[in-house]
Length: 128
Image (cartoon, rainbow, N blue to C red; front, side, top):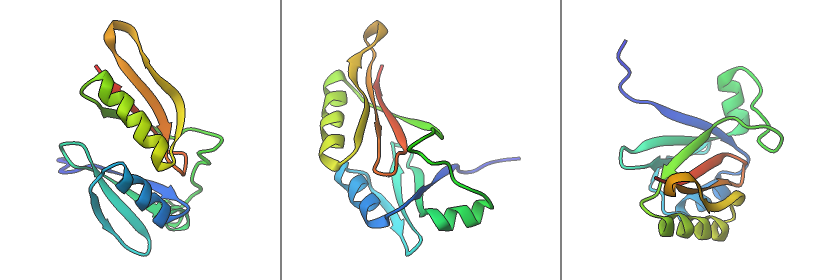
């Protein structure tokens, strides 16, 4: 089996709010419709589709996790420096994201923080 591409699908409550959040952070939009908004992440253009919850639940044939009470997955976004990590944290706050774990320097000079978007999807911004 040869997989040519992989992408992620998340559920959201409000497409306009989600679009505004990711555009404000500087992500390039991949497209949008009445059911979803989509963005490219990273140099390889990893795609995350953000579907309205009822649309994604119907497609999956089951309930979507409540991100306010549980976790589903965490994507790590690579930063070039501690200063870039700090800038990301500032921009996420301005865009309306929730800082879950503040930026700090971990072992061996690593630095990073965890944030949640307006629907509770978690990301780790990390510099190695």
